[in-house]
Image (cartoon, rainbow, N blue to C red):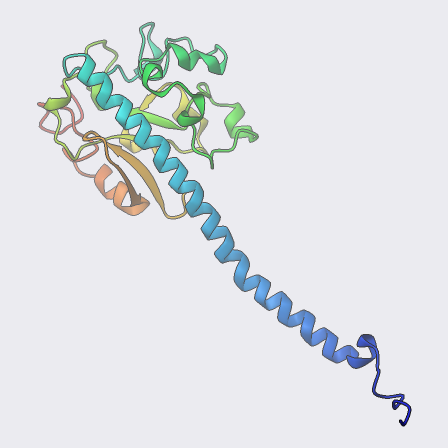
Length: 234
């Protein structure tokens, strides 16, 4: 048998020229640049799904609370007066375990449900928040956007009214208490949209532009104070 030709066992390194190797590296880089945005989007969608799940649990807690309290909605912690609200019993300078004093704790029993997984706690803006318990806020419409204790019965609202959303993480002042007005802004961490809780207990993902269109409507799904012609007052 003839001995093998010296060229029949070329090493892998010798099989590629420098140009060919650079071409392979360039192709890998192009494929990575195409895949990374898709992977990032898939990760964001997964975290959004978890955020929606959190809000569904909160809205279910709202439903259970009203069932147990003759249809009266929980206080929204508007201006953090010294009475218990959905989030806690003020003041909010206490540790995060203070959520255990909130009206929803009986139904939720875990602090993780109060926070969106995309809401970062290691930012300057987060440290400047007055209230660090929750990413979510209840609408001020539950107390007619006033400092008062009485709320409304859940049956006074339209089933499609929005009463919960995620505040704007870029604006620490939006987290001064457990409630807000619709025009104070919403989060930008869910791509081009946001999650909102509806009073009939379902949760929606809506585009930011749609949310802003609703902000302009008085009355509407956001400005929804029962009995108010403009939805923003008594």
